[in-house]
Structures are given as structure tokens and as C-alpha cells.
Image (cartoon, rainbow over all chains, first blue to last red; front, side):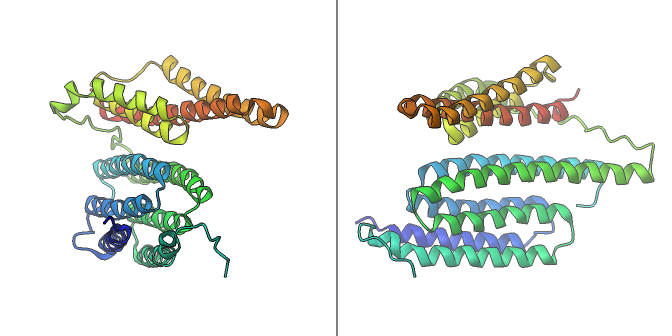
Length: 86
Length: 226
């Protein structure tokens, strides 16, 4: 039937792969690529929270991770148009 | 070794070790990466991953208390990233201005012409606001605030008058007062616990939603410049 551990372990694998991709993955010299890799890890964390039935934490996590991405994109685009070294 | 009560399902007990080890592993990796990285904005992005490690270690316990500890952790992380990104931007501005005084640092207008930004936002914002008010509390505030953010970002018109920004901050203050009154009521008149619970939830909703709305207004001030 429904096996929780499949989802738990796929969440764990996604989290670890996303973290490795964010830290040393291909193309992380570009901060935009780095932010997009962060999203993989956040999907993994969401799966783990789903396995634990942490509904409220899951919803808040989705909302805050979207807003975090917006804030970081804004910071990067401001820094780039000022001509700073990013 | 902490004894686990017998009514806890075996699955939850078996989930503990893998999740704690995942949290420790990704915390380790991301901290090493922070130590190796030189540029500040990359360090800020990696801080996000350290936050995930924190969430996993707390969530691995699997109780309701652990869940309620995750929420403020997430919101504080959001505020932290916002504040540090502002500091980075203003520091770079000062550096550039000290070498080249004539350079203009006002943000450039951003031209985007997308169909979805003109038709969808009204309906989506209504749905998000209604759902956020229905949920109340931290989560409802985040969702309603996301709706406000979407609406504000997608409108082309430039800026709100200063009176409205001050009004929004005033609304946030009212939310804070509601929360405090609810806290006092809990101790003074415990028989009205339901009233104080809803006061606190609505106060948090107002607080978080107006915070997000203010973020959106500031962002539009920069991007919507004509």
C-alpha cells in the first residue's frame, strides 16, 4: 500500500543533491544558478515535512521560500545593475 | 537515550535517525561551502541552506511543539535575508560612490510585458487573501501577504502615496496590540480562551500580511520607475 519511507527517502535524496548542487554544482559562479539549485533542496525539505504531517510548517515553508527567492533575485539584479562584483 | 512513549507510531520513531543525519550532513556541507566562498551574495544564498538544516533537525522530533517551532524559524530567516540583502546593497552603493561620485545609482526601470501580469492577478489575489483569512495565524498571514505581494508587483502604476504606507504600518501596529491583549486575556480571564485565541490569530494575520505587503510596495517603488 502507501509506504511513507519511499517519500521520506526521496525527500532526503533531493535535499542532499540540492545542497551539493548549491555548494559545488556546475555553473554556481552565477548566483542565479545557485538560487535555482536551492529550490531543489527546498522541495526535498517539503517532502520530509509532508511525511511528518507537519501541514502548517509545510505551507509556511512554501510561502517563505518563494518570498526568499524574490528577495534574493532583487538583491542580485540591483547589485548587477550597479556594476558590483557578484 | 530518551524513552519513547508506546503510543507513538513505529514509522515516526524510525524516521528520526535518517532525518537528523540529513540535517547534520547538509549543515556540514553548506558551512564548508560558506567557509570557502568569498563573495557576500553567494554566502547569503548558502545561508538559506543552513536554514534548511535547522528545519530538518527540529522537524525530526515529529511532535506538535517541534512543528510550532519551525514557523518562527522560517519567518525569522526571511527577515534576516531581507535585512542582510539591504545591507549588502547599501554597502556596495557607498563603495561605488566613494570612487566615482558622478555615477547614478538610481534603479533602472524594468520592462516586462507579460499577459499573466495584466489579467490573472485580480482573481489570484482574491483567492489568496480569502484563503489566508480563513487559515489565520502565521501561515494565513504569509499566504495573504503573498497575495498582496503578487497584486502590488503586477500593477504597472507607480508607487503608493506616503499616507497609505503609513496606514499599512498602523494596521500592523493594531495587529500587534491585538496579540498583546490576547496574551493578557489568557492569564486574566482564562474562561475566554477561545476569544483570546482568535484575537491572537487575527493579530498575527494582520502583522505578517502587512509586512509582506510593505515588502511588495518597496519592490514596486524600485522596479515600476518610469
